Length: 287
Image (cartoon, rainbow, N blue to C red):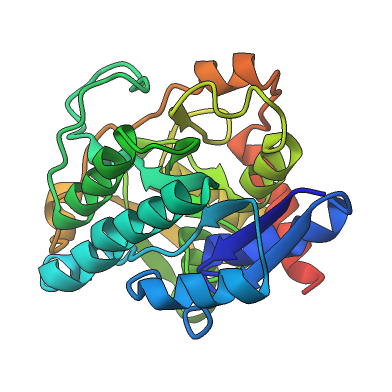
C-alpha cells in the first residue's frame, strides 16, 4: 500500500486532503502539522519518517499571506524556498516522491491568453518570488517530483475569498470588490481528490509542472456576486479597480492558467468554478 506524508496538515489545502482521505482506503496517509513536521527543521522530517515510514511527500506547508509577505521577506522565503529545499534533500536521500504546490502569482499578468506550464515566470511580489524559487529548487531534483500551480484557492477550510465574502456580507450592506483582476478559482476539494486519485499511477510524474484550476475564468467581482447570489444575501457588490484597492503587494491583472496538459494527461473533466462553488457551499453547511 502506498503511503504519503501530508505536511501543513492544518492549513487550508492540508485540510482538503484530510477531508477526502477516507475515499482512498488503498492509500495510507499521514497528516502532520508544524508541531510534528516543521519543514524548516530537517530533523523533524527525519524523526517522523523513522516512526511513520512513507513513500512520498505531499507538501501543503506554505506561507500564503500575499500582502504580509512584503514585510516578511526572510520568513516567507524560509518557508516557501528553504523549506522546499529541505524536503527535496530528504526525498532524494530516501528516494521518495514529492508533490509541491505553487501559484499563478509566479506570472506578471501581462498575458492576454492563459498561461501554460512553459510560459516564462516573472513574479511581481515577494510571495510570487518565493514560490518561484521553490519551483526552481525542484527543477533539477534527483527524485520524482511534480509541482502543481494553482490559483484563487477556495474550500470550506482556512481563510479564503469565499469565506471572506460570506463574512463581510453578514455585517455590511455594500462590499467593494476588484473587477479588473482575472483568474481561475480552484476548488481545493477537487484538487486533493484529483491528486490522490492519480498519484500512485506511473504517468503522474511524467511532467514536473501542471496547472490546475476549476474550469472558467472570472474576476473577483463576478466571483463575489455569484457567492452572494447562491446564499441569497442582501448585500450590494460594488466594482472597484485594483488600482484603487491600494493593496500592499502588486497583483497580476491576468493570471488565468491553461489546464490543457493535466486535463489530457489525467483524462480530467474539470468542474466549472460555478459548480465547484455550489459544491463548496453545500459542503460548508455540513461542517
